[in-house]
Length: 205
Length: 201
Image (tube, rainbow over all chains, first blue to last red; front, side):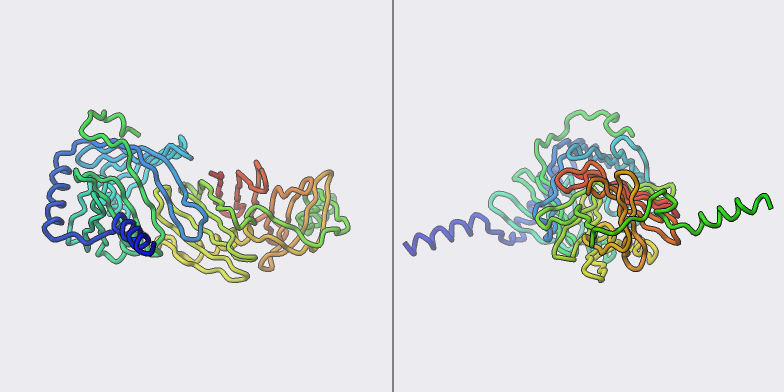
């Protein structure tokens, strides 16, 4: 009986285990993601977002859609429980808040500019920039998880780390943004489609 | 001479208290305390979509309230994308800034938010005076030595009016109330162009 408990414990532990990746595997993953990212012209995907704060009884959940068109057009749209979308285009954020449209010039705002760039890059998974991040690679069963911690102190005060999960094809399936307090926002992508035709009208404000 | 009665009248009106100006009659106080039940359930996460109009600018995000103890609340404002803009704890008479984005960490802004949120989450207050008009009762009380008037209809809190020198300074309006949750809350500042609309999600 005791052995059975040990066995079960080992099985459960192995299933959830997160082990550091070897340097070779890490290089292979990076190459795979970069290759996939370079050949990605468009992405559409649904997502579910979980905002986790330790003091809350439940995570705050929202649903939405993501549209991406290379090189840097991003539309991030929430459909439930509220209608809110934001389009990142050049140095401007175009916001549609339940029908009320506004825009925000982020050209002069370093934080927003970085966030814009990071969102674009994290959708593709391409954050592998050692001048900007401390990077750690982990293996979790068949998926890979890479932790990107911003080196810029001002940015790190806003987001402590990005944890990005990749499937076997080097596609992003999950993005977790950790705040300095360890509260986090976890975004899980579903029904991801790449390189399908995506009209510019999707990004019209 | 003709203007004297009018001047006197204006003077009297100017000295009148906020309830008197609004045609409320003073009545005997029957309630020892007044209660705001809208953030009082510790098992509930109060999550609102918030739209803030400040002068000509608009901001939006999620405003989250959680009761953590008898006189202890946490108030967090985050963007729709989940990034925390500010995170405050209100515990007894303490106000703790757990986190705030440097861009909005201005003394005036923090003081304004501190006052508004303290009024919103304070649950029980002693009644100093009571006024009535038709089916509406108004209970006068004080938060941080500032007069607040709690407007109730059939025992339900409809509005809180914060005054300064007997003039309306901030009005908090609670509507679409179900099971002690106000689905809609408006916070209207009368001396600055600031209004906050909250919609429960």
